[in-house]
Length: 108
Length: 346
Image (cartoon, rainbow over all chains, first blue to last red):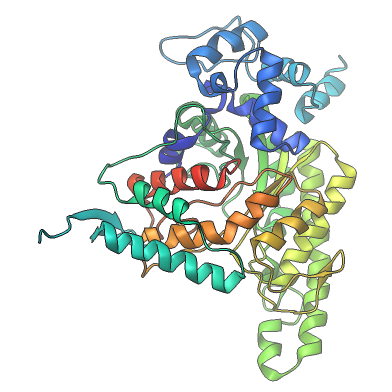
């Protein structure tokens, strides 16, 4: 069922920019149109690009936002998970809880 | 005169049947008329019914929204619970299904149950945050019924009410709701310390108006403490049952609220996301069910100032009540909510 929803109408998560739009809904309570426009503005792309994994691969690499490791492509020297979330927080100008705590606990 | 061709479609229990286009149109009209009458909201317009008919009267195995019209999948209850451990479950949904948020949860999906195990749940959250890029929220049900005897400490209002002990039943629900607010806050505080991005109060209102009130009060307290926190309030059904009958939030009576009023309460409490739920009638077609569900939710989607993530799965929101919902029915519900309601996610 989740697979059907994802294919029928999902933004693709971090395969594209769905995770970034979701963060704006969660932290700033933005409705979809506003959240997409905000993220697209930060990335310098169109709102349609946000669901496009091809357009977003390039932009995620450029901004260090993390990409999925898979059989054909692994990029061990690019930001992943926690590292990527540092860059996501800065790009979107939103606090990410686990990053704030990481900074404090690691005494960065 | 040639016979009208039959088109394969689904009933609310998931069974595959055949209907004509005219029969589907009649079901769409009956679904919207019933919902409009019950909730005192407008029926869907002829154009909207035509659009729904085009989506449902197609023999295609799958359907989808147009490129660029995709929405956020918040995916409450992420995972199958049978793929590796729970964090691997979340990773598989991030990597393989491409959902936009994931939710860590335990199988006893209740804040009261989580409270006894909160340190271990927090540790799992910390590990999940280290291994995922997607936002990770923590979810459970408010589940007020757990606080009544014999499972909980308060007299069982479902036993008191048939005895005519109305005041006692009300006092018991009020005491239970206060305990529930405390437990939600206790678990949420621990999850925030562990790094969560959000808290999901799922299936809110399942035990009626006191259950809904506890969710709203807990949400307001969490919002005051954590301005950045994602807080999702997903509902149990289209209608708030008046098990108490007199409870209010910001001066408004909660019993009997439909989505158009539920959303205002959820918004005022400070939630980030409102999740309306409309249950399936298994004896009616999916066309009848989708028209009914969209009619109930449309006034809420029109006035909401926060994202609306409709519950669309396994018995709610036009997806049949069955263990393995067919992709044809799921994708039609998905497309219908996005294109008619302009919703923000699922």
